[in-house]
Image (tube, rainbow, N blue to C red; front, side, top):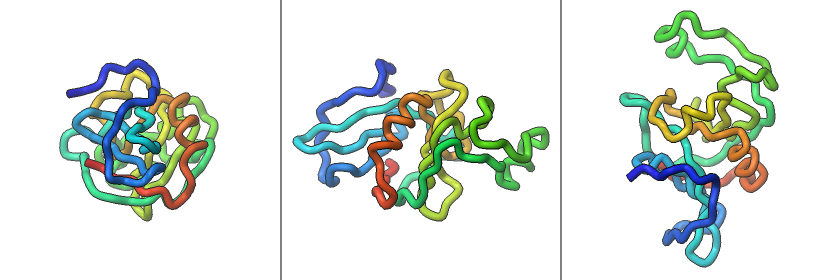
Length: 150
């Protein structure tokens, strides 16, 4: 049931959620931002690899352009050679150009320097987007937006 990436697009989308809500369908590897009149803006996302997926509801607690990145201790334990810190704006920064932080968790909706990973199940629980798509979503999403992960 994965979606072939054609770029972000407005699609028919029946939902009881109010406009502005983000719904991430991990099976489809798609993020939907609910719009009025039974529609949504759909984006392709990368989801958590096996053992790293999750579901539930969160809110966008913070947003950052050119976010800095520091791997959590659990990632360092799994990948000892991972960089310990990357400055915002670094083209290799795994958070890409924009990040929306989900509540007080380590989870984010963020860009990626590796556009080829988008649409795959290979992240460490975050939702990766192409940098052009995350920049578009970022300007549409205020802090406090509800995010439902299914």
